[in-house]
Image (cartoon, rainbow, N blue to C red; front, side, top):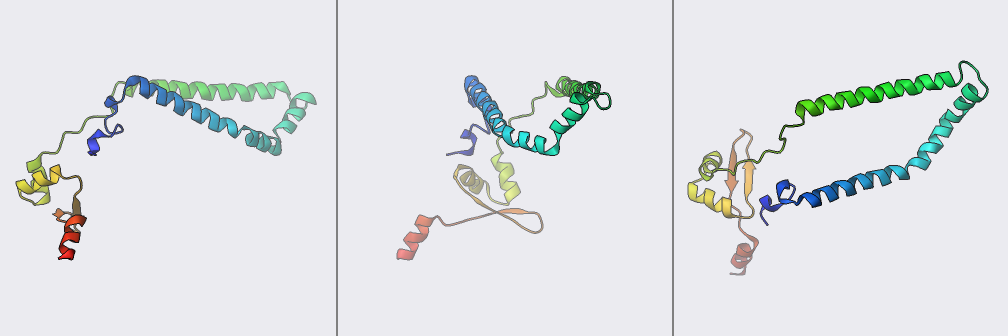
Length: 158
């Protein structure tokens, strides 16, 4: 199988309906996963004392009571609005950019020059399913010919 057949590298090959279905399934899985954590979150919240804080502030009316809770809620809403404004700004600024650009196919002559091989060897490498490259300490890259297992077995049988 060639690497350019994989859907992840070529998302335009996947039908739009399938992409939307996968996005919906992913969102549903995240919601289900977070729903499973709710009992533990509730237990931790009770342990931290949020219920006790509610009783002290609202039920027993110490301090300003419900007004303090409304201030906390208002600050939380302000944070949400600020986050929404920031994400909207980023969407307007970067939303139209194409972040997945198709990379051009490597030119065989350029590949031959970069790997220090002859053009026929580069063509053979381009057609092969697997190649072995060596990255040297000086930063150069070279192609290492490797015997196929069947050729090695045939030679050892002689």
